[in-house]
Image (cartoon, rainbow, N blue to C red):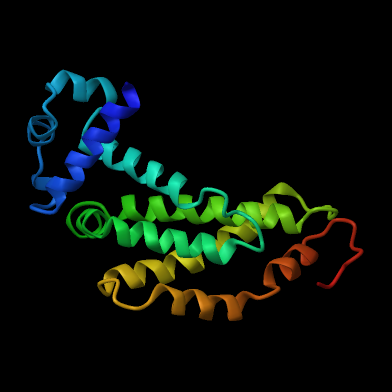
Length: 191
């Protein structure tokens, strides 16, 4: 029952965002639309921004379901773009009206989860410290999120597949090369 209520609150928030910016939406607006009382809202979330964050995390989990391997990273990025497009009013509204950092955090989380899965897969059989794997994931994460934020700022007009295709050409083999540079055992392999 708890997840159903949370999803209903999320749906109401997203519906409200089609009409006004997030900083103009009240908890009363959301609860009236849902047909629940304010206390029910506070049982699940401490404020609207907590609901926004929960919604972002849920969208992230759905977007990357099963797309965390080297062979599927491009599909994973496509899913991230699609999740943002599916929630375009939500993302643009949150990004423009209140807190760009919330959108960035959402995208960083999505991207990091995808990349660390790819890096762990490519690192099998290599002795690479976890902190070095994290550093590699962060490097690629910041590059991808930078491209995506630029895309959001420019109204999400460019075809995401073109961005992914260009990114694919740019980073082909770079994750393996980066892992090889951080190998502890120094017996490098070229793939």
